[in-house]
Image 1 (cartoon, rainbow, N blue to C red):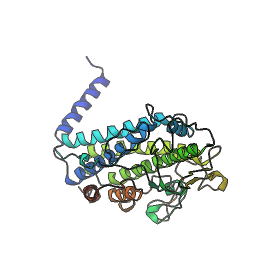
Image 2: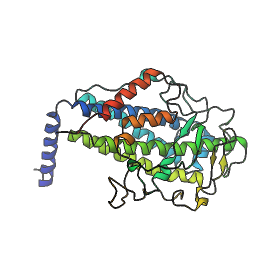
Image 3: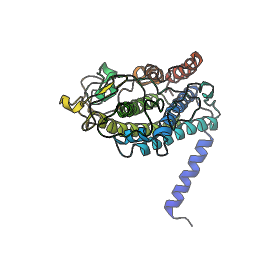
Length: 350
């Protein structure tokens, strides 16, 4: 005979299974939200797999891994873990769509972009391009500011990262056996460290976008089970952002600060030398900020969360400005934007 706790647990499980089985078809809006999130996770998986191949725990590029470890000794493990998380998100969302009789998402026809030719990179078609990024680093100052983009706040770039690779491009300019001392000395070592620093800021950029995206779309969900999915995966995106927000600071603080890419001129200054809370590297927890409307107390929150700033269309526009899709065909943009517009059009109404 089961103890009372066991009976209760069994009863809850049975009720939950019955409720799920009776849930039926998704609303058009909920299906659209899940489809866009599946697409976003497929895109994230593609970029994280590229980072993982070269710099993860089984990465094939010793110099890139060493440059990443100059930021934190556990960077390869974190990269591999983040990759595994995104793979699981994409697989779960598509499986859930199927379980509810909804159309799944497949972007395989758009895996046409070239891989890096550096050691470690598989020579397969990609959805995303990490080879010439324009990384929006304004999130760094946004989360240290008391202003909110949803209330008109604007934010300076922490570091100007323009047309910079986040993975090594080949073994000629960045040989995989290059030593990576702190600070880097040789031209090849400086180039590789700048690439690794760019990756660290790109990690933060991607994951803070996910934190805002999931928060925004959760407000449009109708089905309670779908809401559970969105807030549960969204919480992991927030966790990812917190991790990378910490690690990127080591690229712009001593003893590593001051690296200049010898090819592009992209510079990673000592942000702590500015003596400002908007640049202080260890202020990694979101500062209290304006929220909802003027007149309320400042509060520590994820921001932005309004559709126009954090929704699906805003996400695709941001990724495009990041040059993450550089080289993609028009049909790709048509496909992902249609998914984004459908998700943003969803309404919570009962």
